[in-house]
Amino acid sequence: MTSLAQRLMGNAAFSQIYEHLWRPVFTRGFSLGGPETQDYDRALRAYLARPGDRTVLDIACGPGNYSEDAAAGLTGDGRYIGLDYSMPMLAQAQSRHRLPRISYVRGDAHFLPVADNSIDTVMCLAALYLIPNPLPVLDEMARVLKPGGELIIFTSVEASIAALPGARTAIGWSGLRIFGKRELLVQLQSLGLEHIEQTITGVGQYIHARKPKPQ
Ligand SMILES: C[S@@+](CC[C@H](N)C(=O)[O-])C[C@H]1O[C@@H](n2cnc3c(N)ncnc32)[C@H](O)[C@@H]1O
Image (cartoon, rainbow, N blue to C red; front, side, top):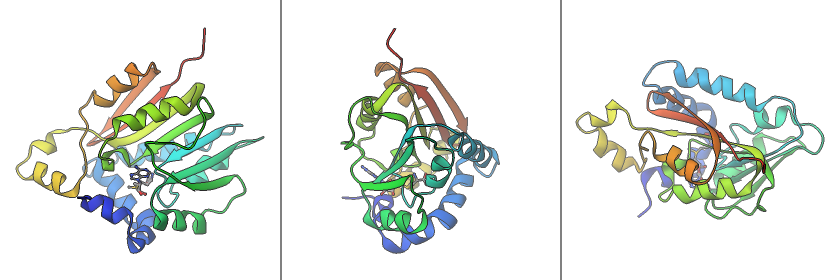
């Protein structure tokens, strides 16, 4: 059975309110009312917008919340590709974020329609916790990265709130997964990624890692 969260992502009405209403509230919620996740989100957007000739793959891009930031600084042959499996989300993305370097594709995060070693920045924001089998998605992200390329993740992480009465039930009902503090790091290490940095903001975590260049 699909979870509540998965059903919402495929809903046309939800896709229309997601970017400007739902996601900002959700982002605040990830730091449990504190400013950390919003601050980090702003810093991430500025980082994504830095100038450069690179290919960016945004897995589970939703309605394209990060498309314009990630495409803003692209130069040369640089381009941004947003991938999602929800048609309503992609329809929103396509109608709202029209820039020459931006394109969208329908696909499943487990089977990226992209060649090995071809992407400079691969990111997956606010989505891994919705995906029933998320660890193989990391394998795919590592596969498509160019040597020297970077991986960026924003997702959930276990925190004391999950121990509160009823919290686990509510989380289970929503279908959201809470990752252990080292769960994703261990997987990334096993894939050979390096310079792995984790920043925890409340019940959210940002991860940045790189694929090594050959010696
Ligand atoms: C909460 S939205 C996140 C959107 C955006 N990345 C953000 O940061 O706000 C999660 C997205 O993941 C997509 N999604 C979930 N499972 C997926 C999968 N296996 N392959 C591709 N997209 C998926 C959903 O359709 C939805 O658009």
